[in-house]
Amino acid sequence: MELLQGKCVILGVTGGIAAYKMPNLASMLRKAGAEVHVVMTEHATQFITPLTFETLTGNRCVVDTFARDFKYEVTHVSLAKAADLILIAPATANVIAKLAHGIADDMLTTLVLAAKCPKLVAPSMNTAMLENPATEENIRKLKDYGFGIIDSAYGMLACRDTGKGKLPEPEELFAHIIKEIAHEKTLAGVRITVTAGPTQEAFDPVRYLTNHSSGRMGYAVAERAMLRGADVTLISGPVSLPPVPFVKLRSVVTAQDMFLAVQEVLPETDVLIMTAAVADYRPVTVAEDKVKKSEDDMTIPVERTEDILRWVGAHKQEDLYVCGFCMETQHLEESAEEKLRRKNMDMIAANNVKVEGAGFGLETNVVTIITKDNIQALPLMRKTEVADCLLDAIEQQRNGKGKTDDSCN
Image 1 (cartoon, one colour):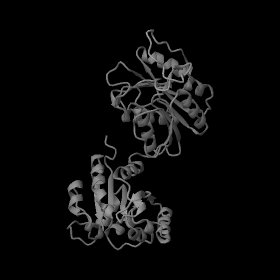
Image 2 (tube, rainbow, N blue to C red):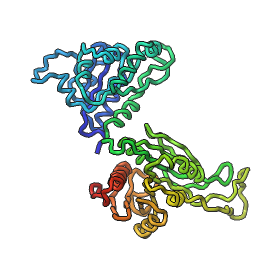
Image 3 (tube, rainbow, N blue to C red):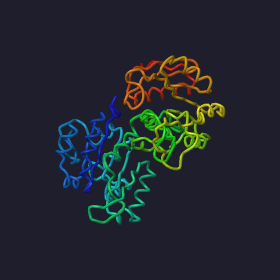
Image 4 (cartoon, helix red, strand yellow):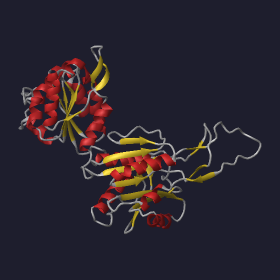
């Protein structure tokens, strides 16, 4: 399902040059399934036309408070009731001042005053205006009133000054919106640590042992947990994925690095989800110089790395929930159940890398979720969907509901 399916988002566009970025955001929201309405100030129409937004959203762009649209409804009230979220971006100093003092003298400020949904404000203006004590005080007032403030970006402004005051890119604004309304905050206050990706075990300065893990599964779990309101820490091996917004990232390289990072965060973790493909072995020694080719076969003596899940299981506090992952090529359920017991986990997600659509480097996975009381085999799914099913199951277990339901089948 699209992230914002069934959600209504109102974009309030005010009179700043950064208004040119907002059509891209409107398009992104539509593609995510949202119903999008745009409300502009008169000054905003000097920078971009209402027709642009109407073409992208399929809805009339509202500017005039007293427009005669021949609907038997009060437009600002009907939109206020329909909205799941309002984003004012770019938010000029003038509009911020109005919102901070309850002034409703145009359609946008009237709408915001009437709405009870979450409201986000993205200030965008000259640096001196942003740092003016009056503007800073008005932004503080908005925070006190419950508005979310999206920090301005740093860079060259339209006036050619360099400093803070740029409107963040549409992708960042979009991330703030989905964080706010994409999912019910069922994990609010829960501290979740996720491990992801491969580890790299060097045997000389230029080469290392590793595996094919892309980190996609762990990054999907971290993102979906964040959308549910969890406080998420992501411990990641070397991957080529962008950071997950609003998630604390700890980058590691070796299995030992990951072990130490897990040890450090464990006292402040309520749920540990170990998706990382941690190396089981590392070279006994690391050569100081590149190992040269020779006529003989190369032999690399190796030793076992620390079994992180086994250590966690041995030191597990009663209130810590642990979910591990395992990859098998045969006897999937039997092997996974044995690991579940031996490593003292609460849940294990197992997949067979020989199954089409499962395994490393793919956007999809085929997972069986196993607990002490239940086995739930999921069909082929995108990894984001697997992450949701996994988190659903963890929530049910932690809430004492026992067996997981079949909603993901």
